[in-house]
Length: 49
Image (cartoon, rainbow, N blue to C red; front, side, top):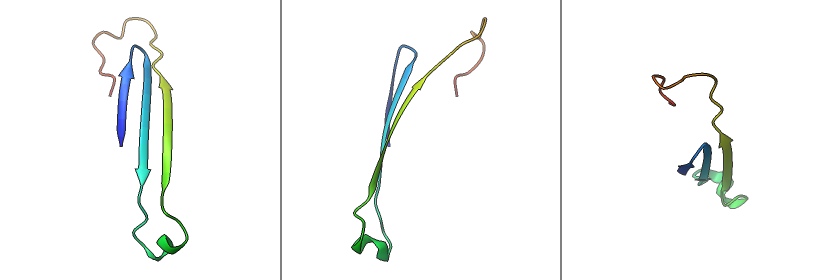
């Protein structure tokens, strides 16, 4: 999994490898993620995670 944050945007990418007998039918899957951080009021003392 790889991710990065740019200003208030969050981007992510993940790749899942199949390790079971299903690997004969599927090579894996990938996921893309896009997020936006919305803050309300003064959140200076609050952790983002």
